[in-house]
Length: 286
Ligand SMILES: NC(=O)c1ccc[n+]([C@@H]2O[C@H](COP(=O)([O-])OP(=O)(O)OC[C@H]3O[C@@H](n4cnc5c(N)ncnc54)[C@H](O)[C@@H]3O)[C@@H](O)[C@H]2O)c1
Image 1 (cartoon, rainbow, N blue to C red):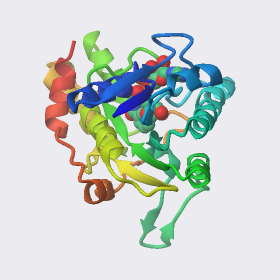
Image 2 (cartoon, rainbow, N blue to C red):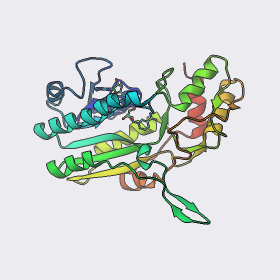
Image 3 (cartoon, helix red, strand yellow):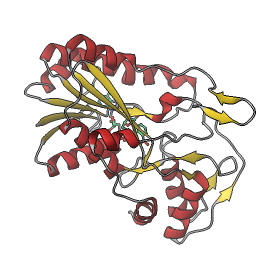
């Protein structure tokens, strides 16, 4: 299968390209990082890139939490406008298969069960209607993989948009202790980038429902706290123990974990890298 991988030079995209090649597919990278003209917001460039393509694996995005509200126009431009231009070009070109990066962020603060108040669901959640509308209108199939905290080799580093594992890893490389915000007990599902890449390949090779968007939580299935992750990295790196700072970041959610069972049962995907193995490897990575 010839697969256009948008964001194919990025952290997850580059692993998807490797995983596709290993399965005998023909990935084509489309990423502004390697070619400024390969911008998902540029209709002509996207149209040209879709030539002869069987499927699209959409990973291009501006990622992270942002450093302030001034970042909002650039996020909307790259992520919303970029996706809209891509979907339009796919509809015109008759490319009917799409696997796209979703995110645990759609859950917002999530749903909790409280002994006193029963089920509590704080705040409204965003919809992912754009891709669903594209699938309905074109008869295409779309699979959204809601990645949890992806980590592993090639992770972006030393930018405010990098993930927490990368911040800790950079601190250890400087000989400093990882600084853990809040009380360190925030729960996350750390999933290895090779497992996320294989989830993309599995979704591309699957036979999803035409005319529909199917969303799958994509996590290891075994949550860990941010403090445990910092400990595991410090230990594996042989560096100083983490410091719990009590600081916090506006916009951070207390716990984000989800049940990823459906991705296993529907598509037969299985994560291969355990937390212990993955953190050991990441701590030692150059
Ligand atoms: N890393 C995680 O933990 C995580 C968690 C949840 C969701 N995601 C999602 O996974 C996807 C990939 O994330 P990543 O961690 O690999 O990030 P990344 O920043 O390493 O990769 C994104 C790539 O997209 C490219 N890109 C940005 N704007 C573009 C544009 N307009 N046109 C073409 N290419 C463009 C960048 O150059 C970069 O190479 C994103 O949609 C992200 O939101 C990541």
